[in-house]
Amino acid sequence: MPAYATADARDWAREHLRGCANVIIPSYTADLRALNEAGIRHDVRRCIELGFRGSLLVSEVNVTLDEYARFTEWAADESAGRLQLVFHASFNTLDENVEAARLATAAGADYALLSYPANFYPASEEDVFAYTKAFCDRVDLGVMLFVVPLWNFGRLHPADISPRMLRRMVDELPNVVAIKAEGARNTGGILDVYRQLRDDVIVTTPLEREVIPLMAVCDFQYTGTSNTEYYGTSVPRMFELARAGDMDAAMELYWQIQPARAANAQITQTTGFINRMQWKFQGWLQGMNGGPLRQPTMKVPDRTMAILRRGLEESGLEPETAPNHAFFEGRNPR
Image (cartoon, rainbow, N blue to C red; front, top):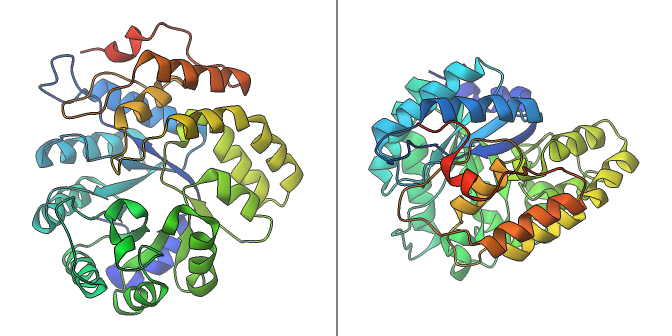
């Protein structure tokens, strides 16, 4: 169970949601019939070594509910409180997400990132509110709302979820503890939410290209969740430098990793489906487990791998030198 009661979720989050959160994609055995415990535990340790204070346990990779519970249990055991674990509410239906949340809560998840199912096509923002409320009412976790074009809500409001609706969610749903703001994927989508709601809940963005420069004028205490393990220790280091008020040092590192940032942007898909194999390869380049993923998954061709490697090399981030086939085997093959 979480270390807080629902009524105290926001106070807990204000105290504990600090630093940077990345992602852990589950690892599988070579035949893809089971989870790879050694690979999962390896990734938890590596995230801690890189300086992350939290990780999203990714669910949208053809993992069953029971497997996800084991994934969470192993991650919680390995981290031993050193890494906050984010439940990824990205299963097929509301009921399935609620069931998965209950399993993950019992296994050691600390809070939830709320996604919306691919088949959810709301006719109005009222429908979005109804889904969000139904999830929040039925789980015992603090919930981070996720404002992003992925849900196709931009047809309801250009900000993806309107500021008025976000205000209502914060006012009426007490276990909403944070907002992951990527509305319209621009700076306005971040700053408008920050301006209006920062005193009520934690407002953040996972976009390191935005959050680090904005920390010159904004008091962000947390950033996540995204594939920032691709940059090694850089994002946690930049974030802590900026938090300490040393924007010169933070921005020096920011510009150092610009080639890697540009490589990441160059190959990022815009299909509305995140290429988790690409993200897993990016993590492998920085010491994470890698290994095969189940179908359906987007592929990562050699030309993409080459771009990602070169971006790290030009940024001085020393990527993995093993050949590409080693990624598909993983560091802990089973």
